[in-house]
Amino acid sequence: MKFYFSINWIKTLYFNFKKFPFATAKKLPVYFYGSVKFKNISGDIYIKAPLKSGMIGFGQSYELISRSKGTAEFSLEGTMVFNGHVQFGKDYFVHVAPQATLTMGNMASLGHSGKIICYDTITFGDFARIGFESQVVDTTAHQMFDSNTQEKFPMTAPITIGNYNYISNRVTILSNTITPDFCTIASNSLCTKDYAALGKNILLGGVPAQLLKSNISRDWEGEMSQMNKWLKV
Image (cartoon, rainbow, N blue to C red; front, side, top):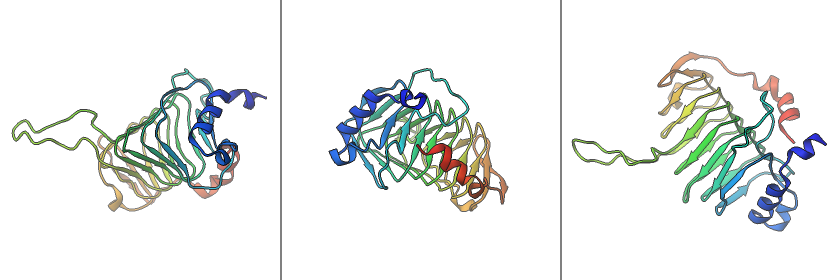
């Protein structure tokens, strides 16, 4: 009963039947939990995985923090692609601008009070899991230029987060960031470039982020059964 009442059935039903064909919508693949403001949901959403009720959870309670401030906001004007089960923690902010594409891999996540602002292309790999109060932003939001040459700098650039990434809390990931598979990022780090050449099983950290340690990885295989039990609805 507690789980049943945690779901915002009005927003859940409205979103599914507005955005999907009836055959998909009736399975309710997307659940919204708690309070959420739909700023704009005129964009497109695609699920490229076997359908299951609640496989995509916005405001899902899967972290230690169990209370919400009720500030969640969702804006979809571009395209979102889901390749499997995905969790967004409480009080998320997700904005996908027109012409932009946000792709979420299977078992990808964004922790509570996290932000995704997508004006170009942001791709989360499978099991790309981001901790609370982190942000992924692929735009400067305002035009910047060289004051000597008057050359305008690009406002957006893609972001690619690799498979099996363990990204801690309060991490900022900006345009041009690429992380390799099996990458760990320490708390309060700032990622701004391509780290793929550093190879797999690395620890990044700092402002800006740099290589801190090689041959280190989260025990994904050891945790898999618990993740399937507690993260999937």
